[in-house]
Amino acid sequence: MTVTPFPLAVSLGDPAGIGPEIIVRSYLKLRSEASAYPFFVVGGVEVLRGAAQRYGFDCPIIPIAQPHEAPMAFHAGLPVMAGLDVPYTPGKPTRLGAKLALTSLEWATRFAGRGEAAGLVTAPVAKAALMEVGFDFPGQTEFLARACNLSEKDAVMMLAGPSLRTVPLTVHIALSEVPKQLTSDLITHRARIVASGLSRDFGIKAPRLAIAGLNPHSGEDGQFGNEEARIIEPAIATLRSEGLDVIGPVPGDALFTPRIRKTYDAALCMYHDQALIPLKALEFDEGVNVTLGLPIIRTSPDHGTAFDIADRGIADAGAMCAALRMAGACASARQASTAHG
Figure 1 (cartoon, rainbow, N blue to C red):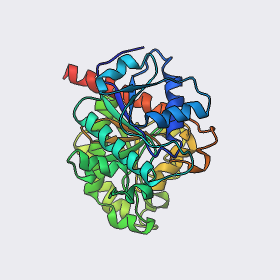
Figure 2 (cartoon, one colour; figure 1 turned 180 degrees about the horizontal axis):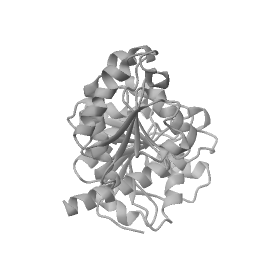
Figure 3 (tube, rainbow, N blue to C red; figure 1 turned 120 degrees about the vertical axis):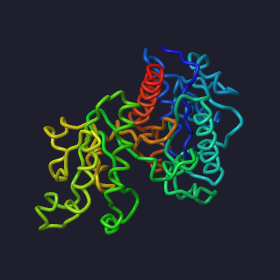
């Protein structure tokens, strides 16, 4: 097991969701891997202890006071920052639990921002519950942008799995609003961030990007819409003039075929479901939400709190394991890039 002076910080997520269960399951899975990157959870000593006991996991919970204690503690059990807690009530969300989730996210972000953690992995939260306790963002991505003193447009959500990476250029808006929000500047700005992130955090020296069309058959020469000609093609031309390897606009019904997937490192999609449907269809149990463009590394499992199964002990930890592995790999890649830069 590789010991590093800077472990990953994991926010607890909503303690009534599947977060505590999948965090414990992930620790038990990853601690035996030779390349495991040590991590600690911010808050929830009793929550995580309760999850381990409820489901019969042999997982000692090791309270710590500072992030730097985590790498050594990781050998003995799951390191957890003491001082933030609520009773463990799986499947029964509470206001106190939502407050704990928000406080854990805030502190985990600070640890990453101050360099006390090598990266941040966020467990699933319930956005409606967070909003009731003062969370005023569409999601954790937007919160992280603000916490890093960036505009929301500078934080780019990428969904990643073993065989596919996708980026929705517009996210939580109605489908009818997508054509109004799309601009050439939006596409070029986010494509540059994606290319930089793939290079810095994934070690891809010359990233290949595919850009999707908006309309069926990419508009079919204007028969089904003109956004490709007005917006998307000029953006592609600009990106190519800057030396980026970009193809498109690729029709949405062809972009994710096995043959075309081999030709790019990430696909930039025009709207939320165009990006998430193929990712979840292909990589549901290993899909990771990665935020590009931040000064910190951030990953998250690409699923929600699943309150409906949180008390049954059947949650799959595959995506959380993948998020932890990816955060560790990104941290190593960023460190290597810094060392050689």
